[in-house]
Length: 412
Ligand SMILES: [Zn+2]
Image (cartoon, rainbow, N blue to C red; front, side, top):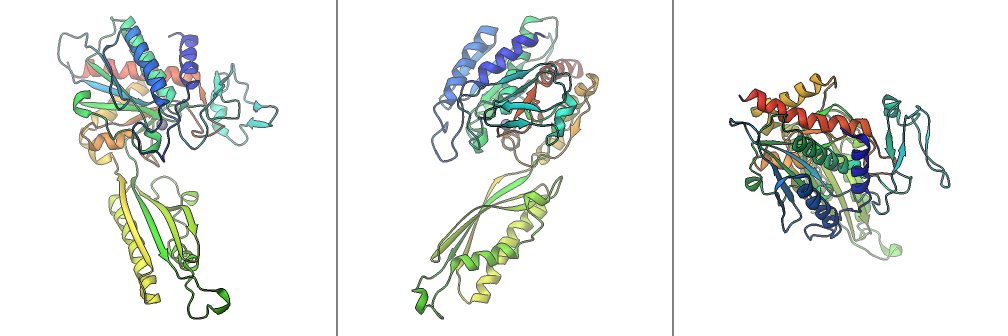
């Protein structure tokens, strides 16, 4: 596999701004996502993919036909073209650091922005490798353009090496993953794969098939404004009541104090005046019973405070967002085993751990396409310290090729 060719491909993708927009209900949420989708459409045709089709919702699908004389399951690979609205993705200027020496990487001299292994110690495992970083002013977009690069590069390699035997492979690049809509208009029937993998994880070795159950909660607290000089017994300060609500929830079950399988309540927005305060939470838990319990606790907390006040001043509105894909993947566990075996064959230590978030794959799994997540190689997503070792992109590309081969062997 040609390293420079793959670097060039990755750089081409990340320099196309595809930031999505959580506040735009349109689909896709930003027009600029089409820019990369169209570039990819052309490129997939050029490398010899078949059925290349960019649909009206900005989903790009294509087929690599089987080169076997027997039937094996059709498998798929999925990545997303958009980048996170958490940090700007405009004018990305990737910096390539060859033969990384294990020291600080100065991202931006003028602004004194440094990527340091003292803080980001994961960097040290990539000594001697080629690291691609930002210039400190944007995110990089390795999430998930590393994944896109890997899928395109693996397909190109398989087209050019017909001696490698594989079944039918479907690929899809989706818009709007970062705003939680990547799977919404994904046509699972048209995709026609028995299972798929999102190439959207972080460090080399990651293999994930468990994610959070997720809900969003909006807590509305109503108060009453009266002239403060004459307020005794009349004013109701919604902000004070809101703070009672916040403090009634378990103080240690928050993102900054939890890891692994520990769930949380996360207050992410608070807007208040005396008259009304609105709290917005996300609720997360891997375990379905605990997840339901968290939702119930929020409702009970509001009820308790309302009862104490003798008035219904707090309203709770909870909406489920996505569920743990584990339930859909464990019945077809061989799809995880195949990826794990491929990594082990390649000398990569599989890092199987629960995702503390969701992926397109969790929603796709519930739409009938079981879809574990595989590393794409990047670190520090959604910010200026994002980076990716080129060697990890190469390994992920090889994992895709390896899975294609393994399916051909396993289902003889
Ligand atoms: Zn991603």
